[in-house]
Length: 326
Ligand code: ATP
Image (cartoon, rainbow, N blue to C red; front, side, top):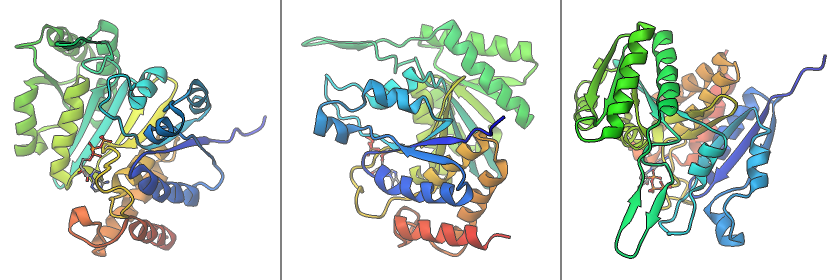
């Protein structure tokens, strides 16, 4: 029986995706020269050139990969433009968005439902009224909370459900299913209103372990929590479904700094680390984190962290740190 080669799809996307993804790709190629890497070109720039940001054949190609490393894609605020990221999450059914926020004395895993909620994509735009449907389903909630419970068990931890059930009926359903599933699984669980949680996570980060919440609340909560670790340039994420997995930094395409060689590639490097762990190489993932720590300890930092290193220079320092490891 032949050994199947691991195939990694690389999507740079738009904006700083073109700068941070090559840094992480170099690292993956160093650690795993035996993997096959192939590029898929989707994004707003494709729409500008061809009128189509992501074709059916791009989705089909992405589905042939064992894992996808993804930069960021700009979603312009135009009525008739369909978000590529939302389309990918739906087409690949990447229902669990895992966003770890780790720092001195705290280690939080935000588990965000990724396919429904306020990002259902069900919208009606009229001349004087626009509506977006917030969809919470039994199936969608059950599978996200079961993912969160699995993670909480691996960490021997506590699950916190973030919701706004005092106002939103859809969150009554979400909360009730989460609490019932946690109780049935014998996992410690508490609940908090999402607005109070956003403040408390900053004030008492060590009180939290695994937080499960709906789509937009998880999106906002992870950006807020990134403040604890130095900002958006540092937080990675994994989008996991039952068949496919896509790894991307929490930040977006950052058009304001694109093309200037100032973007922090750490979030993308850590996303590559999560990709390796998903592919079974926990050690490779640890090596990437150790290299990030070693380079920061040398005082090499990008501008967002108060340093002057460029994206490329930071990437070169990471490669040196990896080559020097025992
Ligand atoms: P998008 O529409 O793609 O989400 P955005 O600019 O609205 O783009 P982000 O890309 O998340 O949102 O950027 C928010 C802010 O954080 C920007 O001002 C950007 O400069 C900063 N930022 C984001 N990522 C990084 C990074 N990797 N390094 C340094 N600064 C970053």
